Image 1 (cartoon, rainbow, N blue to C red):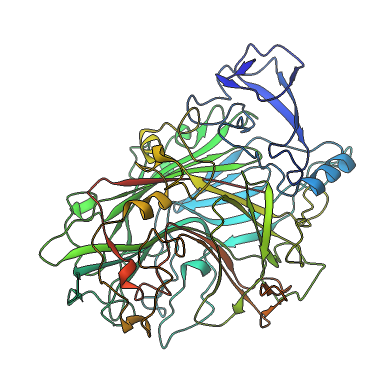
Image 2 (image 1 turned 90 degrees about the horizontal axis):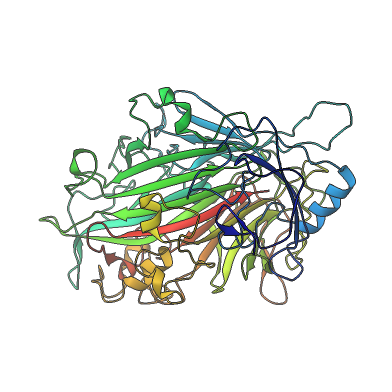
Length: 581
């Protein structure tokens, strides 16, 4: 079989010009991703420009098999360029040419924004804390993950007219919290707004039958219980009753500047900026520590690093890819054993602000549903529509534990069971948002060996399915590996308001190895004859999918039996995700 960039083409390539130069362009048309076969038939026409700069399109061993960011099925088995393929194909035929422009970027003192065909994606390189009058609120915006996304996909092409874009903010990490707890505002990670937020539940103390936390480990309410150490929280943010853990240090790879805004262009782009083959990049390491009385681990700034999350972003014209590793450094000391629960990556979609929509037609960003796909992301499983009232303190959640779960899609379908998401990219403003989530070998991410022949699992739940991934695999592998490690407590206490089964006595239990879908809506959710939650209202102000290694009850104060001792220092886990419309 013919090869492209040392990988199989997995299809027919029609060459329109000499491809001897390594900087090329590609235009492609794909059939729908709902019909079989799982891998969509694809026509690709690849050609070289006479003015192409040698090497502009490739980053060896890092990105895809062509400058457009398309990766052969070994790396990206569903190639989600158009998540709702039926509508996408129809609109391509109607509109004719699909306009495209080079990936661009700009920086300021807080972070960087990348612009591709889908829109503008902003990542901070600092943690922005709460403001005066909002003491200790978790309304902070963290670094590393996409904290704002403006859907700016191109409007239909009009002959003789310049290209124009739509503009709707779908992700807003700066939105104010919508509910209060006493005098404090505590924003749940599902409401935070962001793509790729990482968090855990953490506690330290004497485990076993006489479980007791260290005396000064209090959470935001003043209670002595576990803490939520999460990427949208700044560890340095003061609080009237306690100082929770969170982000405390940031490093940018390939940049020695103390002011990251002064990093060279090569830190942010592979290839030549302004060419169609250029790929935007953001390699950032985000360090977390415990809260008050953070213990010494010997790693990270001041030797107090609890864990580090390495984000490796790649922005191509039609798709955004993310490789992420989590490496833990917690260790026992005189104050007790450190325990961890509920590690997760989170996609929190805030959508369009304004009044709720009770049914179609929906405006851009008024998503009424999150759809689930498995079997390499192409087979529709079902939709989720349930929600809690927009001002409720407790976030409503639904769950899925399908072993082949691979992709979720925010769409405009008001019917729970329909595979058609009513996504209309290229013809209207209403473009869906699709997220692929699966395991990846963390050692490859840490070594910078992403893409290429790196080992990954085509599904998230790989801990017991892919033995080669259990040593440095995904968060599900973390759940499997915890079997036999000390639990914080043999059974659940009343710390969460009740003592219950926690859906399982071990992180390896199938009842807790699930994804969680959360949301807020205006009306009360009802159940259909199959006991599924049905609510055609649009999510306001937020909805989220939490990609858990394992769940641990209703908060950091619940289900101590699912808290397990951290492993040896340097233990790591990996995640691969794509984001596109």
